[in-house]
Length: 214
Image (cartoon, rainbow, N blue to C red):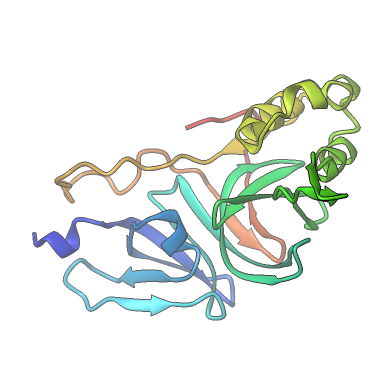
């Protein structure tokens, strides 16, 4: 295998008609995956570039998931690309270009980026994202009431959403970042964990009945 092949891992993309096309996807940095999916039908095939206006999203090794979304940020610009799914549940968590976004059960996206508030020449703490999360997590009163203590930075979001779903006894799915070894044996099984994820009009859904962390 050539060095160019070492990042192509088993995966699939979902077409605009919700069809699943399996093959191999170039597993690159998250910021590069936000903009384009590079796909091969087989390891010997020519690669093709799939842009966000062409497909719904893609999944690598059935555990790392990118969904297409459009979102206008609170900083005033529009994002269009493949958002990396981190947690899927009643409240879901995504990342795009290092910023975090939450999605409620209706599919509405909320911006959790930090935007310091300037007042009289002094930057003050931005409480917007804490307020958003309080509203989204309000049905777990204990979590909502303790959010200022738990939510110091966006690094805390995964733990917060795990606790939230456990508080309500709800299922959720947490995706997995793939660690690529220096050499990849393509003869291995194409999937460590088959998640059963699929698309519908709102994006990826899951069929799990219990908490699952691959």
